[in-house]
Length: 159
Image (cartoon, rainbow, N blue to C red):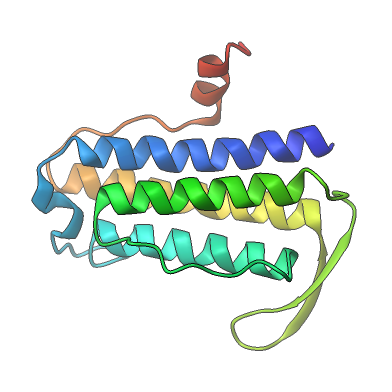
């Protein structure tokens, strides 16, 4: 089960990087271009994903120190997510997926979930917002890029 959680986490960060690399290949103005959508710009969705991923890691790993990543540029966002990816993987390698994590949400309410449940939630949340990004990119008149789990597996040679 631990290997599967590590793979899901790796997929989550791979998919985010894939989307960011795609945006990096579009005109520079696209990242901050205002939109009428669930978020006002692609940069805002990326910042949200980063903030939420950091929040989950800090809830699971009490010693994790949140960083202020440079998310105002695509290259800064890619660097910030790469650093977070490593911190998440390093932490999860030594954890029991069944361990219960007690935490407070953004409203201050207390909850408890198994580590594996939190990882599944985090990956699902990321998939949802990468879908937002894909729709927003198309709304701006550009093609999308696939960040599906099966594409990740194919790239790893796990067909």
